[in-house]
Length: 485
Image 1 (cartoon, rainbow, N blue to C red):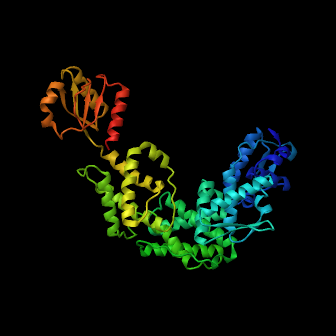
Image 2 (cartoon, rainbow, N blue to C red; image 1 turned 135 degrees about the vertical axis):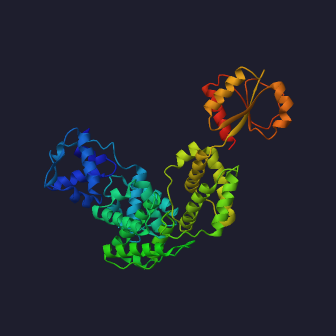
Image 3 (cartoon, rainbow, N blue to C red; image 1 turned 180 degrees about the horizontal axis):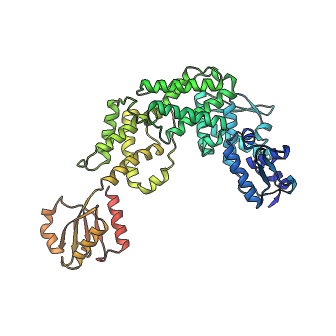
């Protein structure tokens, strides 16, 4: 713990906590709404920050008084503050600076203003700008640095917005909580109104995309006067319903009323792209699935599912409902983060690989492109759900030296350990197996044996286990079953 004045000289950025203390040092009382407007966040965020500041000090350095607001309860020089919890990593700091440039593009900002909230050396500032420049290049944007130390971003509006969305996703976990109170209420009310009119909720993560887009539109038109001179090329939409078009117009009307300006016509089309790229399940929205999409889904299912004996109706319906919005989203350059991707890859590695190969083969053939792992992960979930609901039954032959005693015990243990996965079709001795091998052909998927038979000729998995079937043997059988998918 160090004194406030000592920390402010070498801390990385001026965090929101620092700015809250600084603001309260200049005014007797400030409400959470006052502070929220200054910090451009919600009042809930301010309340949370003040609680953290007091907790870190081990006492109430910021107190509240009903009807007045918050005030410093000790002299600023006596405030003990640890900024080890700093909200910003260097990557987050650069993302925040890039966001400020992007929201103001193509207007320029002085280097001093950009980095005023951070205590950084000239070399670190130059390093940050170089890394920001490289990152912006990935979006097809250019960073200009003038001799008078002014910086700006230039590029097509569509690419500026894509970059803003990506930076927001990387930097801010909750877009709504980072908005000021009025913007948050407005954006929330717009999305709720659209959902009511469509008769369908806009599910996660598509609702996050829509919220982010509305927020970006508001910030762009509020901050940049000539943004209306930009043109956004309208991307193709596979199919669109009149109710979607009306909902897009409704959002445009609300934004125009909120900002007091007239939006260009392309904004309606762009918002429609977000809506048609969402998985809206209402009967109020007519569902027309293109023949090409049906063909693609059928091919993927046939490639991934080894057996067609199960009822694939639910799986097909789920994939058709997902596939067309996904295609619209990709064609319009709308990205969706899959927060479960790492878990999906870890839990279903073989299925993930199989789905990825099948989907990308179809996507290349039909649409001339492949999907990101984020998109593959969403598709894998439908197949995982299908497999969980329709577990594959593995037909097993149990082999032992004599065919009696321990083998019968093993059969019971297998059926108890794998009640819905393994069906023991026969328990045989080595001699019996050799006699019946031809008759058993095609009737079993795996051999589980308690004895090593070196001269056995089989193309099926053979698992050597202890007749007591300990835990490690169960795990080995589970792994073998997964590899058979």
